[in-house]
Length: 335
Image (cartoon, rainbow, N blue to C red; front, side):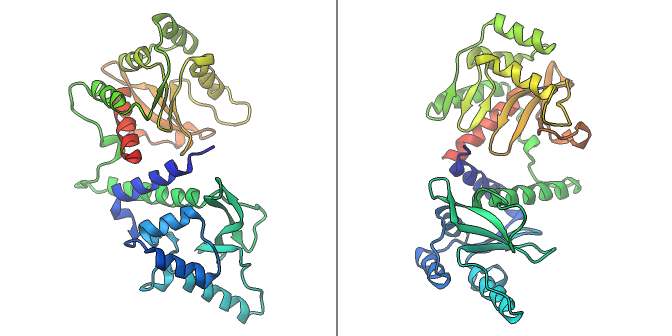
């Protein structure tokens, strides 16, 4: 199951890191939130309440999440609910069911994106998300946090794409959070040891086990990754999954990606997946077509996406750079 709090924290991190991509409020008080509940006659899901406490509302270049915004009715959830119901009544239609809490409107068809307060999930921290009028697909997402994440991820991607076209941009893209430090791997290693509460790494691999990986996948592993596997053997850091050799996980995962049974598009064989992000559902892969000083770059891949659809200009220069970024980012998110 997805760690919903970790996913929510990832959203907070995106908003904090790329403030130019978002318009947010200053956060709402408990009394303001209670007033919304009273006016709408609902009990708000805890994660949506936390969003209101942090930001009040959110808007990007092309999307909104309604909240508490007395100064801008377009972003105010009470106003939008009342206005939508008035329009329904004026055309002799029934109002939106009371258990559906609208947080967005789809521009292309004027349907609402709603939290279904009768379908609570994640130990009653969240509500499933549906469209109104009801779509053929019962639920669009399993939580408010999933919707928030998709909005934030889309906003950041668009912002970085726009920034890439500006030569003098000072935007620090993920791929540019690299370092000229002499030994970035050692810095990542030190951070791992400083945060044992986040670390669930396994047993170190032997030379024989590493040679087996190379033989099975027909590659030569780079020095930085070999060092990591000899010292940590893969495992978890926070919610980040570095493949291990327990039950031959690393090899089996890649062979399944090379020969998928349920998907049309396979992982290209010049790539070796070494990491999986179960929040964003992507793999981080060693790219043996892009090698510098013996170190393959690290690129991101998703299941069933053709290779030609990717733009790897934002790749990490090495496994060490990727490791440092993941470790530091996880510490920041959990701090």
